[in-house]
Length: 263
Ligand code: SAH
Image (cartoon, rainbow, N blue to C red; front, side):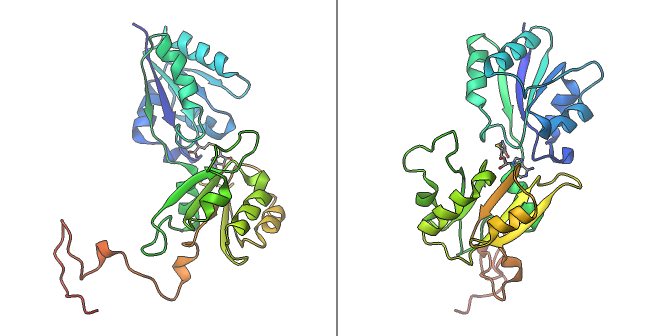
């Protein structure tokens, strides 16, 4: 019986942000294939002595599948460790299809995505009542084209929270798209590099007009999340619309209103 291959989300970088399930799998792993420099710490911190650990950064997809299949023949638990969540820009299905074809069992363990880690690092929220209740996780076209209808300009027209992956070197494209969608020059933009990395995280706050210069000044050219959102800075707003869930006048399944609404 071949072993099982687990696609484990390592989280954004801080090994403490790996899930308990992911950590248990690493502790039981006979072999770990990890994605580049972003997650090596988690792989080496938690995997047992004697575990085969391999960086996939110089491997093709075919080589990775072959490596995983070969290890599954020898180990009960094989881990493919990926940054953030494996289902976001993780080539997950490309990797699982050859495993299914080879009759090897696999499963996915979700991870904390860098969009969540970036907002957490900055003390910001992805949604706010009556401001925006929608989050779009996207990127701009680089070598990978965007499918029709998903151009950032079209998505930005919704004026929701936009978490933009893989695009820090294309910040000018992000600016152009937001402008074309009608975002103001003083709209707040957040960039977080290496969110959650102990001692290496950089948080840059700016506006649509100056975010590129601020990122240049901070020497941020890789591993960064761009967030454009009408929620940014809400911690300092003079007034806030409260969440109905915690409002004393609002009754819900778990709590009866303790005050009556007076509007
Ligand atoms: N699966 C990952 C995304 C992989 S694509 C996830 O869920 O987060 C790689 C992109 O993710 C980078 O270009 C960057 O935009 C973002 N990213 C990954 N780790 C990051 C971190 N610690 N801080 C900020 N952005 C990060």
